Image (tube, rainbow, N blue to C red; front, side, top):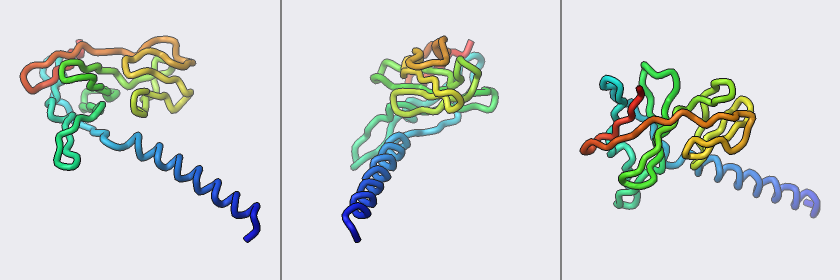
Length: 146
């Protein structure tokens, strides 16, 4: 094998390994959960954020909540045991369902990006995401959909 071919193969392998790691990292700890609709509240157990890793309880940074009555899922970020942010995963540009990549949400249609608080980071969207008031009632997280 000549030097040029060796460098090309090594470069492509490194690129593939890097991209693969980023893709897998964005999937680690993601949990999809079916919420319970109770009047104007979508309820989810706080335990949905828990995961066991090396025999320790760790917490997911976010979960995706779905329900048959909702057109779009809701991404709920956990900032602390008492601070949660709930965002409708609908792009404000043309209504496409967003994808979550760690602490940002991205529109696969035109590339708009939003922060984990719902603020527009990159357009073409120019409006922030819809957020829902969140309250904790015992071991239940209640998202006010009204």
